[in-house]
Figure 1 (cartoon, rainbow, N blue to C red):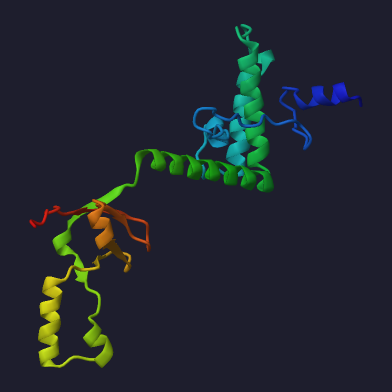
Figure 2: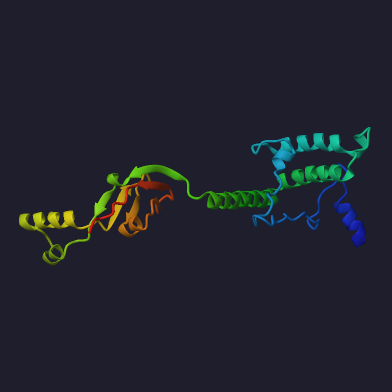
Length: 219
C-alpha cells in the first residue's frame, strides 16, 4: 500500500473505519495569550454519554451518531463538508479511545492534567482563596525565652513574675492560630511590621486574613 493510500485509509469516514496506531492525531494548540494548551476533547460529551457509561453504551451511541452523520443518510448535502467531516472524525475517535483501556487512561490523564494546570493558572490570577478573617487578638503570642530562664533551666515564683513583666514590655516574636487540619497559621512580627495580613497554613494550604491595626508609637 502506498503512503498516499495509507493516509486515505486513516481519514476514511465510513462507519467501518478503524483508526490505526500510526494515524495522525490533531495536537492541542497552544493559546498564545495564556500559554495553556487547549483542552483535550471530551469524548463522553461527544457521544452524549456520562463518564459512568459502559462499553455497550459507547458502541450503541457511536452507531446511532455514525448513522446520523453518514453522508449516504443525508437527503441534503451539508453546507460545510469540513465541519461534517470533523464531527464524524470525533465520533469515531471517541469510540476508538473509550473502548481501548490503555488509550482511555492516557486520555483521562491528559484531561486531568489540563484541568489541574488550568485551575492553578486561574488561582494564580485571582490570588489565594481566603478561608476566613481572624482577628490578631485570637492568635497566641510567642515570646523569645529570656536569658535568665535559659540559664537556670526553670523558674521560681520570683523569676516567673519577672518573666511576665518582661513579656508585658517585650513584643511577641510571632503569633499562631490553630488550623482545622491540626497544623497552624503563623504570622511573624516582621510580617506585621510589613503590613502583611494574609497567611497560609503549611499543613493544608488554606489561607486566612489577619485583622489588626498598626499603632504608631509616640516618641
